[in-house]
Image 1 (cartoon, one colour):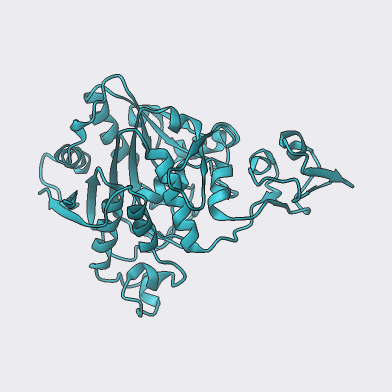
Image 2: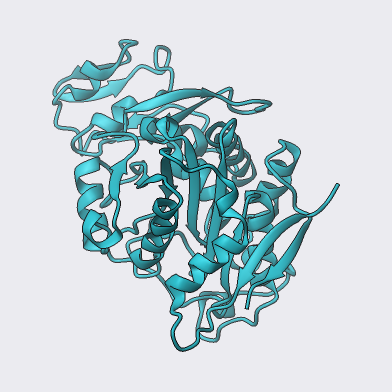
Length: 369
């Protein structure tokens, strides 16, 4: 079996070619033109950045990718799903406002922005997972499943639960609806923070299983009836309904892979990762810390598994940035990301993705000057 090809270019530029143009040259060298984009809807899956975080990808990179898609006859849109946690991207209105705050608009990027799981994070499609051990039916944002082609544009970084955040994290966790994110993060069922609850009854009205009830002006959830769909989380206006975070990080990584399989199965896909501003934690944080290693460059491949492996390997070859969180940690694991967060092992994700047939951890790195 031949190695998967991963194309790489550094962040060095020359007169007449800035980084957006260099990114376009990279993805063309990687073969994006092999995909038939003519009149196809193309979901460019991206993270718009939590307000307050400055490590997210600048919109210029998304513009560059969208321009190539349009040049090839496609109809691109930028997309993400709402978050499970409290923050600036928990519903479509806040999410769009946060995207605009960070520079992502139709005017700046040249293509429309669609929040894939709708206004409250409940607009989802149930998608079978082929060969899934933990998830049999993934809950994916509806607009993502409506697309003909998937392109992931990821900021490669550390992550406090998954170890790293790359293409598979962007696809699997990022394309899950709010209920899907709950399913990946836990094996249990939601509960109510009664001090936040105002007894509005939104959870009661949305539930198809008669699990939430209002007693003395406060909601509670009957777990004997609850099926764990998470819709009550999506509709609660006070963020009083919360999912337990009770899955191990290894199982979380495997569920991310299974959700990725559901998203990618049966349609063309292409993947891009920028290993720059490699922060210790996810862009979902409302802040970012000193990068843990120097900027590396831009990567592209048809294989998301090879892409994540190549980015992780490249990061591990870099020196530790002084003054970073990684510099403060004990370096005893032989891996920057496990040194950073010892309860994680990012290779569980890529190894399981290879086992599920999403790609290969064996790759050939081809540098584009």
